[in-house]
Image (cartoon, rainbow, N blue to C red; front, side):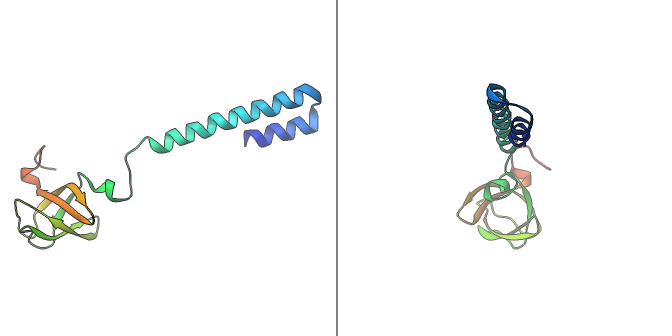
Length: 114
């Protein structure tokens, strides 16, 4: 937007060197703005995709001895629980292999409860 405004001002009101300096300043502002937006968009943790599931607490839909189903954010996932747990137990996702989640019961997870 800064480059567009600079071009309009430069070509309607200015001549010579001032015109090109105005366009260059507009381009510089546009570049800084683009870099700031890229930085801002990358500053947080992912909100989508497999990586966003690490550390999330869910509930087992079926018994996981060692393989079962876990419900997280309204979706059913295939899960593996080495410690084993019954249906309805809260579990925390510790890793992901393919489309299978590795989970541990919340009581056994680092940090304990919710």
